[in-house]
Length: 384
Image (tube, rainbow, N blue to C red):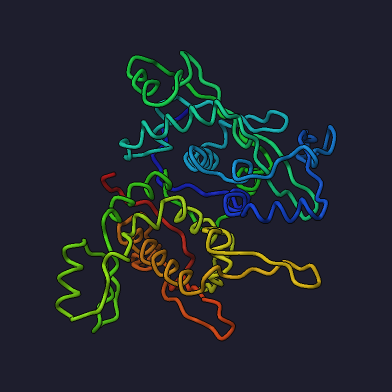
């Protein structure tokens, strides 16, 4: 593979949809009798042909079958980067595309400068390889696919982790891996490989860089300035000083540091959810808080059925939901200030989410964008 030094990747919209689809969505489809297919092939024109039997009654819908966590965000970044910059290296293989990458390039595309996450990534790759857990993927309104989104094969040496946990990771220094072959489902990546639709560009190794920003949240609390109304991150000692200075009545024991509430996984889902809804033209995009939480932090949402049998989403607790959305706003804007996402072509985007407001129905609206031109993002070099 030729040397690639570009800093952008274009995440497929179907991947963005898959990573932000909540478990309850698949359960509802299952109850309605949506067909689940386990085996597929493709015609020469790329149309899907369903083989085998409908597997609906055999599929256990759980967090494991619906959640794309662990190694998947890293893998999606690698695949998206290759699809953006090295389409010529991709080979078609029935249900999957295939690409073979030098192992050191694979790590570069997954981590970029965030080499401190190497062991974590390798352990997650080991777990992925051992579990071989198929995932539920909504193909259209009436059909879902139950398949492995990504399959890995390592050449020259054993797999990166031959044993469990840290013991396996410690052996890596003595092992040599020349190449890694990645098989990835056509139906998830075909839109980027074939059409190259551009909406929001993500930086190279996006997830690794988001995870590195988690350090900025460690033991930090959100303090809202009484005079300006602006939020900022402070440590516990500074928080105590400010509470005393402004004579505020606040019980610190009830407060949680930002890193205990916001993870890179949630921010990653939020950016992908934005991507699905961004039309690349509007200066501002307005989304409902209840929809954001349903797709990015479903623990704050409950679903009930009305008398007509229609599913209705509610906040578990409106105040808690709004408080969490405020933290999420601060976290995503901190990511912007860290330089990971910079708006093009004129100015740096200091705040991706511009404000949150309550509306009469009790919902919460999130506004993001505040830009004059298309919201393409570029990567910014930083220490990880």
